[in-house]
Image (cartoon, rainbow, N blue to C red):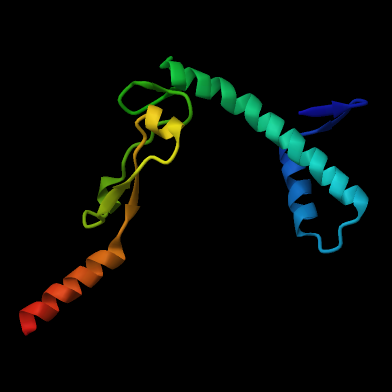
Length: 130
């Protein structure tokens, strides 16, 4: 929360003002200066929340949020999987880590490749017909 002369501007207020200023067509100098100040304030607020969590994660400290299996996480609360609505045919391939933080944390991300699967199935059907 930013306070000046007993007037408070919350994080949500700053995000709302930033969205309005970003979508404004004709910005004057005051709007540009205010937008820079809001961007800086939002960055500081995000950093103040993110950095302690990131440090705890990097040193392997226990987090403050519970996961499903009882372990502790620094960033997000654990949720149960919705097995009734899961797509068992969804195939994903791992993407390579792109920065040092991902490599150090052994983070693996996946991308779906439905189009490749459809093309492959089409090719198999075509080859079987000929």
